[in-house]
Image 1 (tube, rainbow, N blue to C red):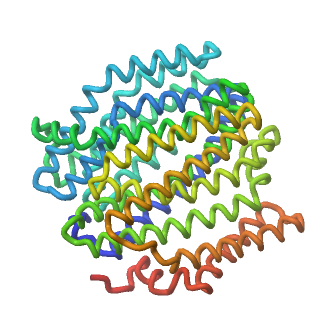
Image 2 (image 1 turned 45 degrees about the vertical axis):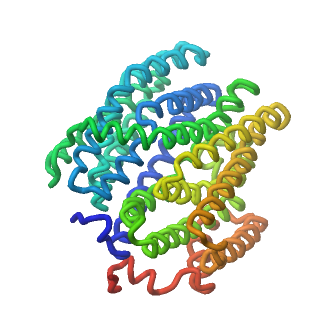
Image 3 (image 1 turned 90 degrees about the vertical axis):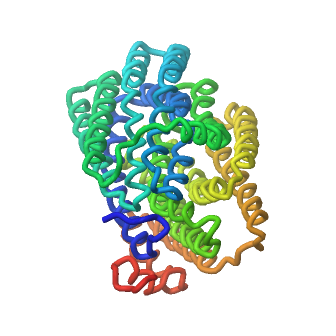
Length: 482
């Protein structure tokens, strides 16, 4: 079932978000196991090289898309008649950028590699980059607020990658085998998605010269901003790797991987609601504000609950997933959990800035964030190791959140929003933290902490009216929504 973004009901959006969250949670659980196997396969030094190589390739690989998906999605949601031209233009731009991106990626791996395995693994992942361009076809599903096929592809990739990692772990393979497994599973997922598009009720994407020019012009500041965001999000891993060594990079990379996997929550919400916001502006300001508030409330519930658990259960969580040798990294998890709260709201703020046409202001904010992050890391990492990188991640995200929120409120001529249900969610998360800390001091095992969080948090949310029965009715489909 698909529909126009501008006609999407609250119930329909809730169902799509819930479907994504359920699928992504299942994939996250599998991904946690797979990450643990990768870490145990490679060890501290090997995983430090693996995660650093990923950070470098992710930064350079961004040039292949340059954040232009946001432009194509926004314009497709507003102009469904020509969506095939918008998405076709995006795919052609990605194809044109591919060769220089692959050459830059090769240069980075050659400069950074500290072992023969790291070099070969990096080259393998670079060779597989062309398959990433097919991912733009997923926008055809997103603009219809029907993300079942992308979630199916995500699950297929996760399962195939999990099987590959398990086999490599049992056979005592290494970084090269992991690179082959990863690129193969990603390529298969891209092919499946392309086949699904052929069966969709949509015209085959074809580039239009006019659309290509518009995408490039509108997307330039967005692309530069996205590049800066990736830079300040990944540069800390590289700084730790260079200044304090591969072991520290491996420790930091392990807990940071949990933060990266948690992005599935804001991504799920944004995937569903970003085309709704784009279609609402500027014609329906009230709908835009309602949708943005809904997104903020959902993001508060999920991110603050995660922070409460990270504060109380960081050490047993790290021990369970990565093993005893990585427990030293546990203190960074609560700090990164706090950063995730602001990262979640950053997804919403960044989308609003693009919809409101404030791309160049977003670029300025991203540049400020990069300067703050790099300067702080260069000062703190030599003094405090990877914990300095974790704290600078939090500081940077606070700066981005504060600057972007101020700009959005000024543009929309709005006062500072009342805390409302978000304030009550903060209180619920604080009480949950206290309860879990009490259990931890009583030497409760991790399973007990998980069970307590699953019981206490929903009870606190309902008791404090951060969530109500009507919200549940919308999700289960028993509320009538216009």
